[in-house]
Length: 337
Image (cartoon, rainbow, N blue to C red; front, side, top):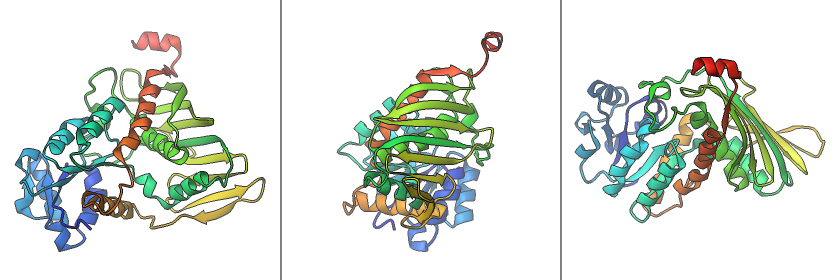
């Protein structure tokens, strides 16, 4: 899967444990090519013990990596992505950056420009690999639904990600308030719709809670060309957790947690279940990402997720924050401030 690459995983947190390590630890030949970079010695040693990585390939800092390590997965918290990816790029190391590529579009552009002509850079927008989302992409781009008029998307549940650092709610922010559910779930949605429609998001209205801290709920209206997106995302309450795409010829709908199938219909006909192409397991997406990345580094394939393609969705996230209004009544906001 890694070909001739020696690969470093930067950060041994929850995403590495659940997504990358199970794939990289499948066979001894791959495990022996993996280095772990983690400032916490107990955490990196535990990861090596749990997954069978070599104890002599554990380091606490990127600077300690040997020169023959020419590829990396950056699985650090999002506010560290720029600071930890730039040193890798400067060494000529090709990088998969965990979603989001950066916390702002400007920071993402900085990474894209730094990597240009020097190394391969991609981001783990894994939903592009999901059969259900890929089938929706195929149908929309083939014109099976006609012109897309509206997309409704509601996604949320109680926050239960097993974060080891807690960065979601206490990370530093260089200006303004920390970012919350929009940067975590919202970026998935904006990336999907941008990918489906090949259009950049334009924000018409944005409202959220969390003023003074990271937001846990947001509602927004956006335009992607002539298509309207009605968006709701939440960290503290369960929403419908689905999407509906309405076109002039037909429609499709799906669950955000069903990575295999969607329902489609033509005109006002009956809904029919269709399965998308490929495997639909969580670690199947990691295997696809890593395999494509290795092939791209070796010049055998084009990237499935070009880093530059995720900048426009991040610019949409920036605009959602810039235009945000509060759900709280005026008297409450005045008291809280």
